[in-house]
Amino acid sequence: MSLEVILFFIFGFVAAVAAVMMITRNNPVIAALYLILNMASLAGLYLTLNAQFIAVAQVIVYAGAIMVLFLFVIMLLRPENEKKFLESNPKIKIFAFVVAGFVFVQLIYIIFFSAPSNILQKNLDASVQAGTIESIGNELFRNYVLPFEAAGFLLLAATIGAILLAKKKIE
Amino acid sequence: MTITIEYYLILSAFMFLVGVAGVLTRRNAIVVFMCIELMLNSANLTMIAFASYLGSSVGQLFVFFVMTVAAAEAAVGLAIIIAIFRNKLTVNIDEINILKW
Image (cartoon, rainbow over all chains, first blue to last red; front, side, top):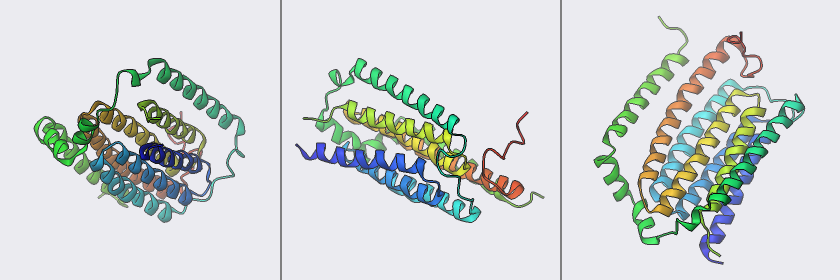
């Protein structure tokens, strides 16, 4: 087995288990910590896919900034623990899992039916070249300047909106 | 044995549906928000996988934009949750029903 296979199975297993653990914990702080584990293992998967820049951005932006924000809010509000998982309203929850399982089977069917690996064979050189900061920067500042500016404006609007919403009173 | 793109797509589908199940079953607004982040992440994984197998950096660029939108969404959404908590002293979405008809 090559290193890529081993790394995929390790990171994929950790990501899947962390996702399941996240939705079944009734303490929100522990759920947030499992989500951070999930994001860190996703960053590892991005590295095996030769997306170095996105892997670093994932750790800094998601596992760093966004999750710290979540933990801050959880610890500020100190929400009471939910009831034990599946204890309240078990019928609705079982219905939700049946729906999710049904859609999952459909997706698996579509993935195997269309078999994208017949068309998409990995070209290692092109893949490594695509993930470098150089090629991403070229693409971003040549062909996608307007979306980049729009994203900056969106962040400004979100900052102002968050301050306004969380302020105590608007005079 | 080589890792084909189907492996990544299946992992991504699994994570997305775990997120869907979390949104439908959890009652804490902050945890529902984290499940939405999980779903965004699984979509990101799909885009990175396709970008890598196609040898194109456009997919990675879109992941970059998705991260921007996720950061904005988290900031505004958590501010809304704080504002609701200040008024109702709860983040349980079963008790936040003032917009219900």
